Length: 122
Length: 225
Image 1 (cartoon, chains in turn red, purple):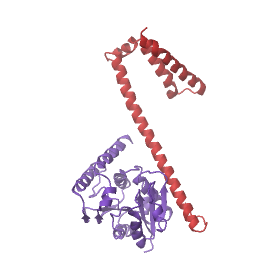
Image 2 (cartoon, one colour):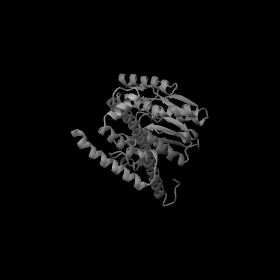
Image 3 (spheres, chains in turn red, green):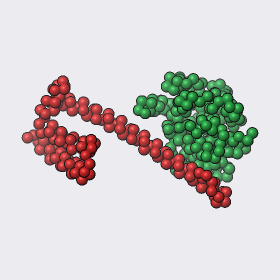
Image 4 (cartoon, one colour):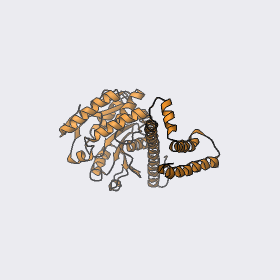
């Protein structure tokens, strides 16, 4: 076993166990909740036996396992960026809507105060 | 004329210029809605006695968001025509009637102020070029023919204002409004308006470089939405 494997495998094992525990705690199996354990398991396997990725890469027509990992991480990064961007947009417009709601409500209250406490439609 | 014209002004850190602008508009139009878009200066304070409806965004959300807030409020107050007007004094309040008239006559749903049909005082050369490029960009992206894509002087009928959805909170809302006109098949007219550029309005306005950012924001949204 290489020094790298000695250092990284215990870390991966802990992360794998943690994600598995989380999965057991929520008691709900769904695609996204399985993603964590599956990724750590694959990472562990790939580090333990680098030929594992090479075999998958070869079966897909990509020469080296390392190349496969680079392609996959590039894809994952793009996906993540897109996901975060869309999520950010949603939060951003929710924030605007909330700000708007408060502004209109306060203006209604101010108008009601000016009108001597009568209700003003808002 | 008993139909109610509401003038909506979005303001962000405009305390230096906005009070006389609102006073001039208010002198002719009783219904003025100012949306202070989370200013850090005394924009709201200097308007307390102006008689305008004052709305305040607690946090800065951008001009598009502020206009949408003002428009929604004006609709709640029973507006028949809603005119958007810039806070920095570059628009002429005498043009408000001209902008509202075709809508009141039922000739169209939206009017858009155009500085290229009207007269422009002191427009810097780079500003002219950037605005012309924006017009070309709009023609391609939004497929709508206008002579001035980024003029804040606009008027909406009640129905159009109620249907308007500005989701681009920041400056790209100008192109989005044109998209909305296309999408809803609103009848629109371009109206020549006077724009006077002062050192103040130029400093407050968008830098020409910002146009690139606005354009890319618009494109990116088109792709991802």
